[in-house]
Image (cartoon, rainbow, N blue to C red; front, side, top):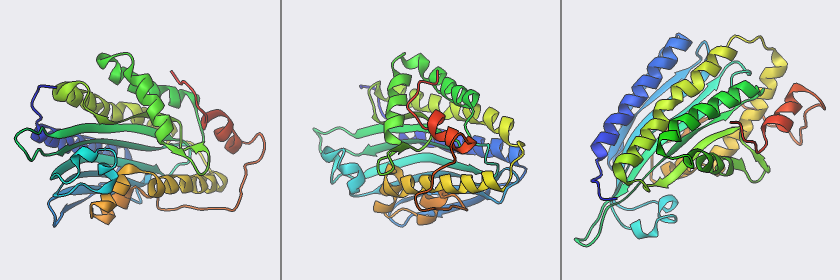
Length: 304
């Protein structure tokens, strides 16, 4: 890891990625995102792009943030005690799309970079990349799951054959609701604290994941967005969205880090779905399409 870190290059890439994804989604939905730029008193700022009440998406959020601080929040210092007390810099793009049609899956993607600055002559900067994407269907289709995973696998292949299965396993483990004993969705890839290839190649890996998102999700979106549905499907969608809320508020590292670092609450919580329902001890009807989600999709499975 002898190559020099280049935070400005990461910053420029992330801003461009946000713009490309927003443009692609606007073309599909037909409505424009609200652009809400903000500044953080402690240092840094960002741009939250939000589409609500769209033709295809009830809510779609694509956020870019670049925040700085003088002391590492507990969410990060637990994993990296050697960085505690150092000034730090974090930047990333994070998105969550909540479709109107229950046959279109919700999707999440995040790519980020973190650095804790050296304070002494004999110290080095501590840095890492993180990110990934995962798919959360309400009504599962095997071809969608296979496509999503195949695009991720192909994006990671140039860096070594072991990265996709490793990041896929990490994704399955991370997006798991321990209190429910069930996966949030059908997974994808997830990586964190990644610096193993040195800065240049680690950054290239992060870009490969970020650049793969549009091809991983848009074909699924186009295939399902006009599927007829009724109140039953919408009701189940709202119920399953409750699992999404539970994960983000209890387990999600980005949400916890953002709140602990005095981040902008509106931007942190733009991932929340607009309509959600909870029911006491609800179970799907046997042999129903809703039951099939649990039996055939919310399971540990090698999709490609």
